[in-house]
Length: 309
Image 1 (tube, helix red, strand yellow):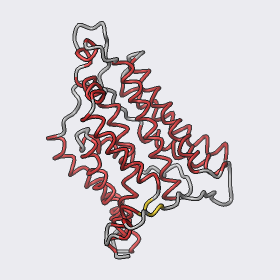
Image 2 (cartoon, helix red, strand yellow; image 1 turned 180 degrees about the vertical axis):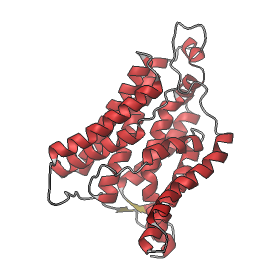
Image 3 (tube, rainbow, N blue to C red; image 1 turned 60 degrees about the vertical axis):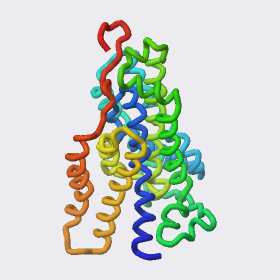
């Protein structure tokens, strides 16, 4: 395998946590609910996914329960901001700290003190015949694990749903003008609740992807800021699935290049290499914020009795 093909394959794998967490952020945001709990929910998803897989031997069950716990936190965000009308930023931060603490607590309750680091089997690669033999990009695109394929299908499916269906148009209208959407009979509260729940589930799976595909083990630092970068990526992608995919590839490429440079032993301090993805993100965001179209009602709670939107 050539160096380019190897980097391409690693980049596609590294893209998935960014992509899933950003799509989850996008879903709630398009309905007007802005989450800042991604880092914590991803860490909790990683903890639950690892522990369930470790205890049962089933990575699929670990992924499903990680999605479930992420969905619970997403529903909590939607319920607190839609029904109780609490501040979205404050609730999001509270959920971030709660999820972060719970992740570490669950790991210590189940695993405790261990002389050796417990490990699980990572998801196997599923090669698609013929397509995986395409030069250079064949193995990068068609010799991946199941979650990579599902993430790609999800991005395409969300694009079709949001921009080619009436239901997708209704969803986007809730984030743009909920008063108008409500007057047309679109269930604003229900839309906000299901989108935040689904978004939280995607964040949980994004977290579980790391121990079940990358590391085969869990640490409290496994997310490494990917949740915060997912927020930036959602803005970078203009809250649109197709641009979020492109941004996720860019973020992942920066991550992989920095990691490969560190492993190759070049004479540069490791701290400098670790900060490369964040510097690249900052530079890109300076330009991206100029054209990114944010949902008009993002971060604001809807009061049906209010005279204004």
